[in-house]
Length: 188
Image (cartoon, rainbow, N blue to C red; front, side):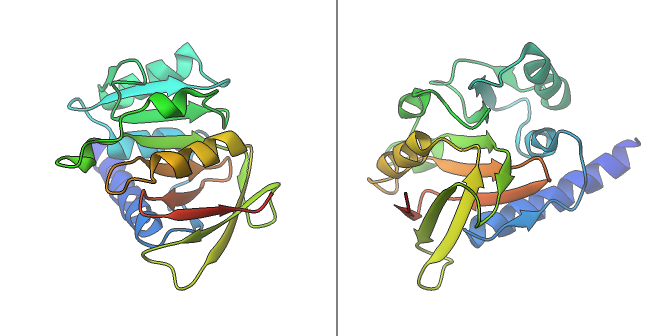
């Protein structure tokens, strides 16, 4: 694919990501189909100036190599990473060790990209969101996301402006943005 077309794809994906973070709780379909949609997200957000990590049960050397090949971003441990890709929907407790920024530099908190099976209100894990960009409350759901990670996300973001941002991406090329400003109400 020519570089011009790839750049246009990344611009379209970036606009979609901005919408998902501006209007949390709304599911957006990526404007470009890809068999591994996480690579579109990584190609859009990562470059040689940031560091990434891949954790979770779906971690593979192949995924790490593909992300590096596309972005030239340095692979590091999750505690140092700017972007953490959670392959398989569970960080297995590693979420608590991620960078949350400081009061002076809250933007230094990590962004976590979860690869889940499906994003849908009818999914097994249901939760509601409150906060900026949402009128009253909005219901969400995700199959393949560990509830322990959702609760850890809630705890890590309890001292706003410090915290982490989360992006869910599913196998159908849909995304859901969860910025650190969100208040999560779980519906177990």
